[in-house]
Length: 96
Image (cartoon, rainbow, N blue to C red; front, top):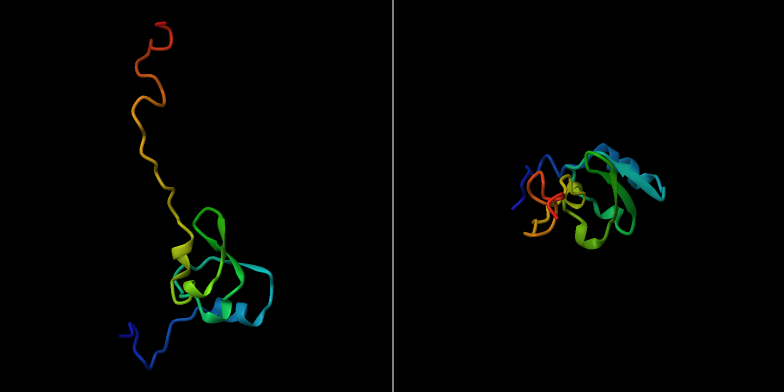
């Protein structure tokens, strides 16, 4: 079931149309919302995540997905284990 009206066609950002015609080695993409077209397969792009561009190699499995899915905008928080890290209390370092 298509998400957009058939008469409108699929959403393609104008920037992707320029990439299709231009054969550069690696391009930066600031827009995270357009889906990846099949013409970009086997090319490298850098997708902006809000802080720095993240390098991404486009494969056949990524076609149709949004470009922002492959550049995470948030850092992954690792769970802290007990007993590691800073010592508790002000005098913990001096008490030995």
